[in-house]
Length: 99
Image (tube, rainbow, N blue to C red; front, side, top):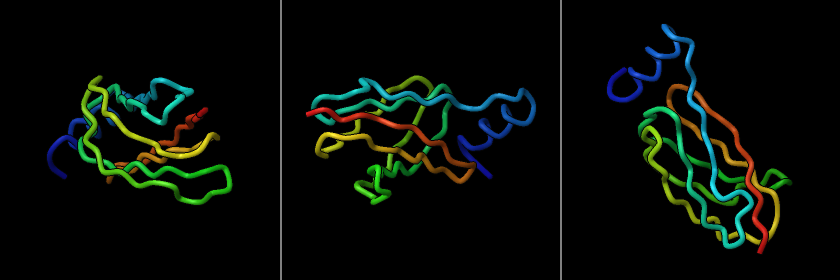
């Protein structure tokens, strides 16, 4: 392993820390959100699914400690699930789009 992943794994193993992700605003009225992480994660994939489990979007982003990353969810109103995937693991969040 190399890069940002080393720091995350080191903190997880030695300190028991895992990243905390947040989405703002939630709910969103226009599909524009900011995704943040409490730790440097590096390059990740963000997959967006609707409540029926259909993939509605796939984004490649870089997550750094408390640096918001803008995403645009051009979907109709509804509840969506985000899957954040990195080589070290994955996290799941939900976001409400109300247009």
